[in-house]
Amino acid sequence: MVELKNVSVTYSSGVDALNNVSLRINDGDFAFVVGSSGAGKSTMIKLLLKEIDATSGVVTVNGYNLSKLKKRKIPEFRRTLGFVFQDFRLIPSMTVYENIAFVLRVIDAPIKYIRKRVPYVISLVGLHAKTNSYPDELSGGEKQRVAIARALVNDPQLIIADEPTGNIDPELSYEIVELLKGINDQGTTILMVTHEHDLVRHFGGRIINITDGEIVFDEVILGTSDELAAETIPDMSIETSVEEKTVNEVPSDTGSGFVSGLSQGEEAALLSSGEDIDMSIDDMTPDDVIAAITGDERSGGV
Image (cartoon, rainbow, N blue to C red; front, side, top):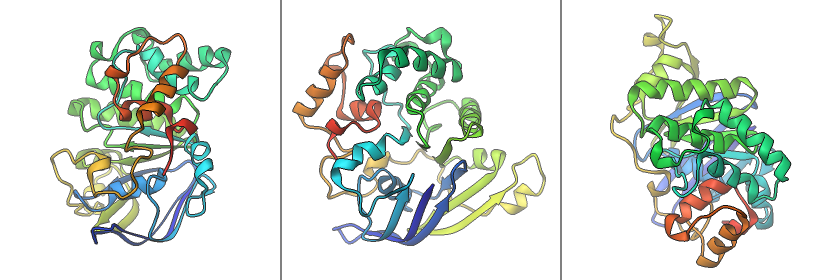
């Protein structure tokens, strides 16, 4: 369950990113979050990841009160989440299997469990034939399927997908959303941020529109299979261009954190934990590592 109660975020620059926002997403929901660039969507994601703290109000995610969450508990909390990036963030020197297995290796999951769980999620996203392929051998749609499998492998309660169709061909966007819908049907809560108006119209469901830091629309609508959908959906002012990445919406004061990066020592510790995996730190950015971890205690915290 995700709940924001009277949440506001004001950055040190004076930017009011969110203004008295209240929102509840129940377990098992699927919700689209839409809005123009700079509307506050990325700030909301940072709050839900505990990368930043609310200036006022209460944020609760998966039973954790993030307003009171101690730093040492952040890794434990983040293991209840899965995150899908717009630009995939796959580790280029690892195969599909290794990219997904790495998430479980860094939290010391039993080898027997890894060998069972990883093939299962690979099959779930339809990539069994690509198990031993490297990212540069995959299409954009296949890379995003790997990213979804990686987010799913730790069996999270909530998956946050930030523009998951932004870097793939339009015709594949529907397949990715169908995949997320299928995962949702199995009980995982999905929160998908998107700028793609056509996808929202096609699938319908719960639509949350953020404008100037406030929620201006939060309703369940019908998809385009019903003629009423075109009349029901509001003008969301969604830009047609790909929005900036999550970490670049508004400057943050938090320093290193869930998205912003690791020290060299922390990176080295993470790399050394991936036994039997041949990878070079030169092939990885801090964000690559963070994306693969879903919140190991060695990743630091906010």
